[in-house]
Image (cartoon, rainbow, N blue to C red; front, side, top):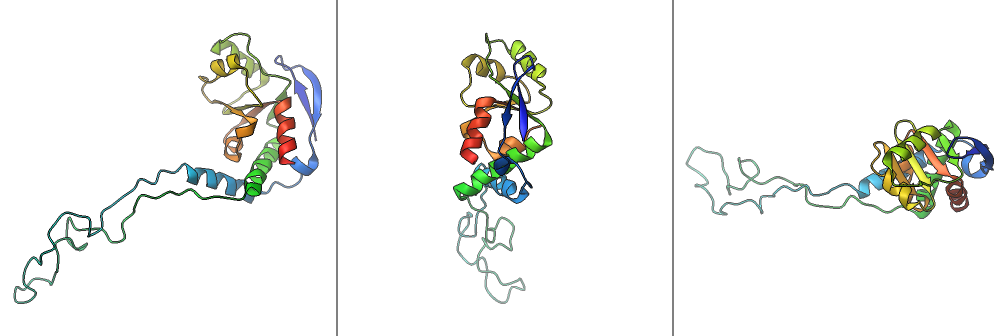
Length: 206
């Protein structure tokens, strides 16, 4: 697979070869799913909590006699059957995070990138730099490159001016190649990546 490399004016200045052994072939959706679910689970807030019968307020004294009152038999006002009683097997604070093999995480990212490469929504640029900290100028730059909808910008190391001027743009996310995840890739419509980032990802994922 070969992709054109463009400059900031979207003029073709070269090309880059992608290894079919890395980004070619059938995309394995199950690896993408496993990687995304693991990241979502790690960020899930497990702060839910309800009180069991041993945690609700109330006396442990038997409220009335066992027999002779005509009322149902009960041993405590904290029984789950009564109003204001405890909850049976209540939810408790917990962590939903779980680990996965590094190979699975890398494979998920590789397959996610492969799906985007094959869909033709990846734009490779020679470099991304901003002459000044102007959000308007950076927005115009990304629009010229073909940014549409949710846009993911990937580079090995971002220029400070570009980072400061692009971080406020709606729908634009800037992620270093070393921190890229499968969820970042899948949750986007267009990917703008530098040649250095693509080469680095191909090296690591290969």
